[in-house]
Image 1: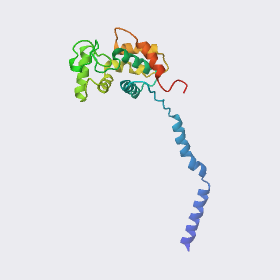
Image 2 (image 1 turned 180 degrees about the horizontal axis):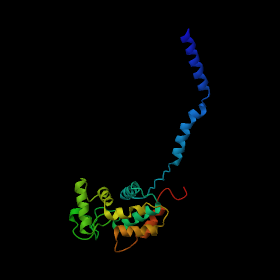
Image 3 (image 1 turned 45 degrees about the horizontal axis):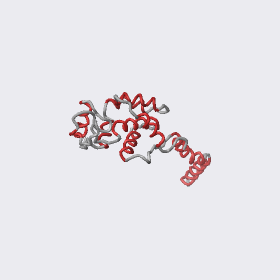
Image 4 (image 1 turned 90 degrees about the vertical axis):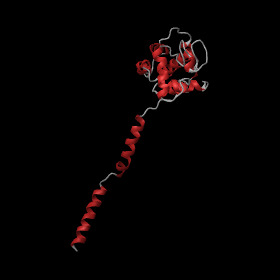
Length: 199
């Protein structure tokens, strides 16, 4: 009999406590916390270039994968690569389209690696990563390992600047001798990129 009475008291106490629980808060609070976290996450729109060549698209994606999202920064980078090689990975300075091993003078590849250290560095990278140094994929991989790139990368990740601003950092990266049409190319890319500003 005592056991029955004790059980009844326990049940009554539990019911009283449960009655005081605000079920709405109990159910909704975790969900609201999750929604607040989701709202804090800002996803930058991925910039594409529908009219670009396969090689151009590979470079554009690679730059964005490195965290560069400003359309003008991307345009400046793309304009510089176009000026250097027209996105031909197997081009030797002067225009010859030949394998890496056969380019013995001047620059080679996407950004016309010219100095002995940078040119040989591409070969070493290709060997250690089992890739062909005459290809876009291999050269893009090597590009991001260079000291010259790592020095300017933080500045290229800063958004809201002009093409001319990013062009200054591209000069520090490449150290070109002739400016050529790289700025004009950059503005062309900025117009080609999608989504367009405001969309």
